[in-house]
Amino acid sequence: MNLVIDVGNTLIKLAVFESSTLKFKKVCLKKDFLKALVQVSDKFENLNNCILSSVGALTENQLLKLKSMFKVQVLTNSTNVPFNNLYATPLTLGVDRIALLAAASVKYSRKNVLVIDAGSCITYDFLNNKSEYLGGAISPGTEMRYKALNNYTAKLPLLNSAVPTKMIGNSTATSIHVGIMNGILHEIEGFIDSYKKEYPDLTVILTGGDLHFLQDRLKNDIFADSNFLLEGLHYILEHNRDSC
Image (cartoon, rainbow, N blue to C red):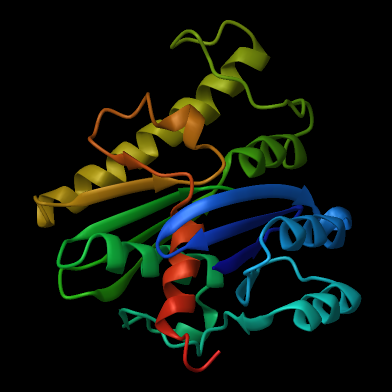
């Protein structure tokens, strides 16, 4: 059994895989990581290998504790992956995007795949049917857009995200919601349509924190998968089992 750990900016996801099956998933705050780690270890006694993907770094104490409990592989830009990375600046490619591409290369082998991750940022990553990563795009995520309107104007308020019920906003608040949320939908639809003009057989994967809002509102056919990044991390761990 393998342990997969994805460290975000505020939350940490821990997942247990047996073969290729996700058996358990837990989400915790960074401050509760060691407690959650012990709970997972106690629940699954056969855990040995672990992969760590860290966008938001663990503390030195947390990392030392993790390494004392498991054989840990830390995902970096130099980690061996199951796809050919043709990105012009491979050392700047985020480990979260690397994990998503690994999942695409294994689960959708020999297909043209666009992976859309709607999180803090919205990332678009394209893997062709030769398992070559060509690149993609990075756009501001939902929360970032709300904050930008507040930070860069004198009077627009900072709002929590909300799904608009009408196309036309009849107040400043509803206009912001319509602009941001529908703007994201139209952006994603536009990207998908542009890719499909060149790759008509395109497979589109949608994942990330805003998956719940987007998956039922997009007109294009997509595969929604909230665990896509975790699955990619597991594939990378298995791909490097002998060297971890």
